[in-house]
Image (cartoon, rainbow, N blue to C red; front, side, top):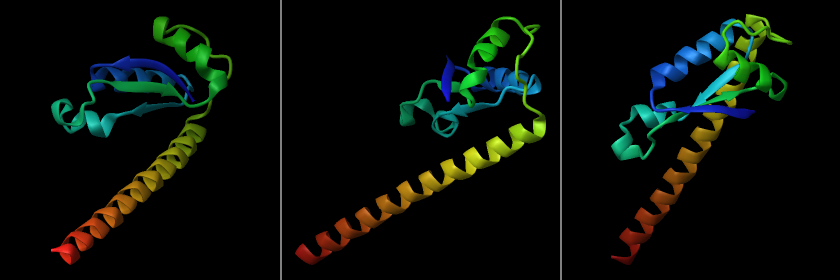
Length: 117
């Protein structure tokens, strides 16, 4: 996965991602949830657009500059759907694991605080 661009507008990132997807290029937008949560609180002032498959990087960059650029190896929409489902499922598992570890640490600190009081 390689970074294509950073955006201060989630809508612009989503528009470019949809255009790339329609041409057979698999993408991912990172930072959406933090960006939506209010940048002043999350510290995230931009979102990033990534190309999922490294071999599509040059085509993706060219498409962002020239919508008529011919893609060398476009993916069928069905394949992009599978990639996105796999990626989103894996990302969700990582987030859930991080939250669980944080909750266990907080519970341990809480119990330690109660015991020492």
